[in-house]
Image (tube, rainbow, N blue to C red):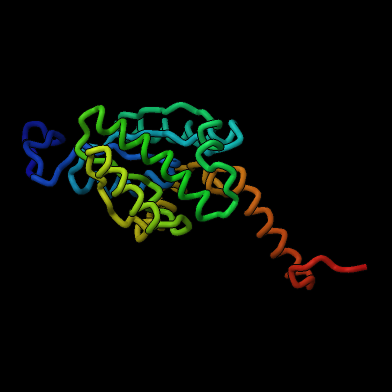
Length: 212
């Protein structure tokens, strides 16, 4: 949009599509490209870090530290939700199937985001989970749209996955911590299993334990 010549960084007006958006943020690297895309669309972005699934606590705090630093650098208001891991375990209710477990985790975080957005007069909410090629993208979209309808706040859907490489570029350029797993203990365990399997295959074990 046009900018003032006297105050070049002050937008004189925004497009009709401009909205105040609450973005649920899982980590700083993912937020880089999502923030860039939303900002380019003229939206006013605020961030919510609500991720009780992230464990252990040291991992949670490390990711939060980079979120805080990025939000400060971009002048983005940040809200930090409660870190209550019991809520997370209650939400997954003992489910070990990966897709169902993730669906329940998405619901916990997206419902909280939508409620905060509705209570604080945001026009819409979205999530950085839509950037990851490893998440259950369609589940996130369907859940968030249903939650938005039930709460009465718009879910701003955008497939951010094409910007994933951009997020890698920005986060590496800024020296951000890039985690190796989604966040929960299950995903941490699963990545070690996959690594162990690949090592066994490389060593000629075919991915199976040798019998004596």
